[in-house]
Image (cartoon, rainbow, N blue to C red):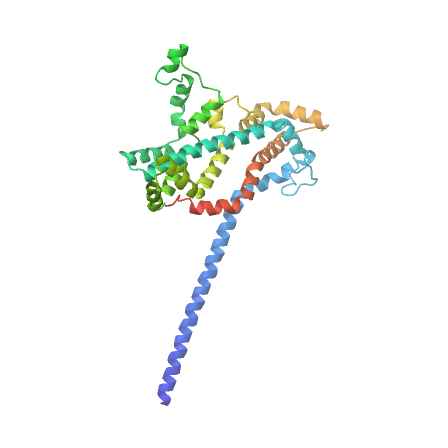
Length: 338
């Protein structure tokens, strides 16, 4: 009995020691993994925020110390003159910002409506060559928009539908430099990255329970009534996700607005024109005269340009800060990885 007890105690001790070593090994692995994960997150965050951190000393610094090589991260004297000059030069009375926000909201709404309808048709309706149409949607995502620029430009320059306008007016319509050209692009599925929105809606609608549609059909609902009354209200995660992306991308667009409506009051295009490098001498002379600065340098121009960029993205930052939690939840439920 004594030997058996001793052997049992030894086995228990060995077992306990093995468990302790296993637990210790797992704890070390967990600590190493957390250190690696936090280091990676910190590194990526710093890489993304570095440009913003780098411009803060310039935009909040005094113009007289911008060319001081000793000033790197903290300005010697705080000043908001960069923002004052940026508002006066690039924003004026703020009309362009309001019009850009309104334009982005309207075009985003058109894009989401047409994309949701197309995604629902591709995800829930069985019709010939449905897979081929889905492949074409993916192609619009992969192919750069520059490849379609020339045919789109020529089409809108001499726009006609089955020769109707030529028959009535004697010549086709010229839709270039007109705001509704951008609305037509959004309505027909050729807006900014609209293939992604169609794909998101298709994935989401494809995952909806078929019992919902069957119950609607039994109650006498047709295609459009089922879409508007049943499917679309249940697609709120995909709607919020796609609408947020569409609004942000249209607000910052200079490609479509620059080619199809270059005379429009869009703040992104306006800032690009105002802060063109060829205007640096004239702009510096005006700043020196307006604010009584004895001398200005290219660093002054850069500080004002950075301040204008921060003011430009301020509405988008406010939008994301307010709706951050809701957006994250909707991104997870949008079906984009379905």
